[in-house]
Image (tube, rainbow, N blue to C red):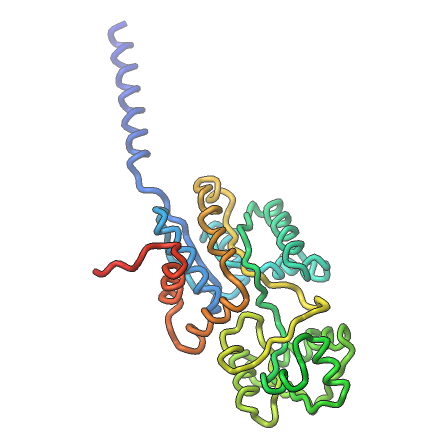
Length: 312
């Protein structure tokens, strides 16, 4: 009996030591990542800094790669959280023509449902803005011809305006421009399209601003930082031709179960954004050359999401 009691006491002691060791081990950091774009990285830094400020340790894996690379890493559990765009779910789940993607709320709800069921990925609160492809025209022309929407632009083209668009070959030939032309009943002749090598929106915006070869209209993304800096007017997609690409943080379900407070921490940040505020923030990175992490910290402090910077 004495030996049995001794063995039992030893077992209890070992169990207590094991529990103490587990309790004393540091919490596993949340691995926050991003795509290669400056906006994706900037938003990723905001989330990472916000989590750190709330006492949640993180690991920085920003600018990991293009969408397929980051997506694969999330599904494999190599990263825990990154900012995706709602419209991409159409391609993730082979449903690119579903009309839900053209509405921010419907697209968010459908993508969230599909990703959770198939991959145990949770979509957190989205920003109320879209980074979809769009057209922007010089402000002087927009003012003179009352160009606010794509319907206005189509009317301008049909009136015989001397429109000259700078865009990528993908935009011109991959279906986006043709879709806009069909939805809004206009047509641009080959002479009215200048396809720039590389097709980066910085180049198309710059060409429209500089009036290079008569260019007055640019292919852009909705939250491009260069739009305002170049004094262009973004045309509203008033007939919802293009899918909505709203920034949305997505996180592995197991990570959120371990840290359920993440959802409430991130929500006010994402809800604070508008298209205009994202354009202004992107301009600081894309035009002024500031680092995404610096801009992220400044924004969080300006909104009171984190305290003032501490001197070292």
